[in-house]
Amino acid sequence: MHLKDRIENGMLFYEHGHTDPVDIAQEQELDALRRHCKEVMFEYNHTSPADQEKRQALLKGLLGKCDGRVFIEDGVHMSYGCHLFLEGSFYANFNLSVVDDANIYIGDKTMLGPNVVLCTTGHPAYPLYREMVAHYSLPIHIGKNVWIGSNAVVLPGVTIGDNAIIGAGSVVTRDIPADVVAMGSPCRVVRKIDERDREYYFRDMKVDFPYTLRQE
Image (cartoon, rainbow, N blue to C red):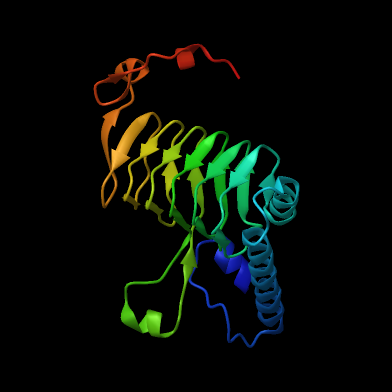
């Protein structure tokens, strides 16, 4: 099995040092994709915030899917970009980091706070394998209308269900179901989102504005 197949199947792989001609060609192809992504990220992060047309064009030319209203603040960094699939509108605050050796799928109307990390790639625990610079990559699936708080980290293979909230500073190591609030390190479900959340937007602070009546 060759390099790209190993990555796609969640197997251990090396980025460099191959001897098989097919693996060498795939290694060079992936190197070129990473270099291209770095160049696009550099241009994006140095484009005027007023030039939204150019910023949108850069994202749409790089990402695997970017069809909706997408706004990503400066300081964004990605490994490939082409493995990130945005299924609708999307917002990410400052300093988003995307390690997308494997695919990342994000649903419509999802928002990320500052300094969020989405990381599909890890290294084995056994030290000899790390000395050999072995990697593995597993896809991340994030549902629609998810809110991920600042400084949260989402690790390889995680699925987060629709409407879930991930608390600030969480490290998400396992799947999180839909319609819950989860937080901590490791991230765990603390409660379901319920009718009280329709009436109170934060602690004992009541909604006094008709947001609940707003229609898209």
